[in-house]
Length: 347
Image (cartoon, rainbow, N blue to C red; front, top):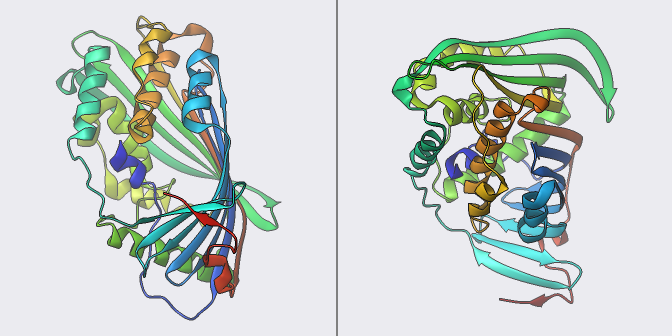
């Protein structure tokens, strides 16, 4: 799952041009069925090889496990972070205490067996195996609605994206359908937006190179193929991969014209055979020290809860919302990328 989270990072381009910087403000929300909702608000300043990020996050837990997660893992967080790719270091700012910490940017060591181990664990819990799953139908469609409206001063047009997988377990006879519905409001890429995005994506690509990650820049966004693959592999493993027409799906996603300002997605699961739902004690084994690995577990457990609960059929197992507030190209003062005066360094 760590691989999947990293792959959600957007990367494009390489060469830095000029001295202009970019200011990008956005907010996002992810919701896990029965566990809670995590919301973030980010303000990012990028210029050349440096980035300053102000972020605040809140988690509203549901039930006992959600409340535990809210206190121990997420909580209410507000912080600043300076990333300097030339100096290969990251500085975290703790504004309320006027303190900061510093640590080097290092190569990321990915456990390539992690994804397979998580999938095996899910199969053991559900009784499913790759060989038992037969994909009956997979379809991805992008439909322009021809609706328009202005969002945060961006003139936008609406697109709806539908991804549906129908499957059958040949061992148990169980049949089901997984659906990912996404509502997209996209704006035309003006010259200013293009330049701002180029600065952002240049920085992201260099960062990923510095930490030793190789990614395909054409499919890593929340509307790219790897976002869909994350859901697909979580549910169907090799069976889903065998039925994945990447070339066709890339062409379909190109129907979305412009840059997304708002993205609303909902992931649903349904089955002809209900599974026994374990009590909340099942969730006591969450590893709170491994939030990226836990992301996959939350998603899988949420999907299984929705799948087995008749009363929750119309609620998504997982939902997400992203919103662009502004993207502005302008020179940024170097002071933005320095530790404020009076801050004390801590370990």
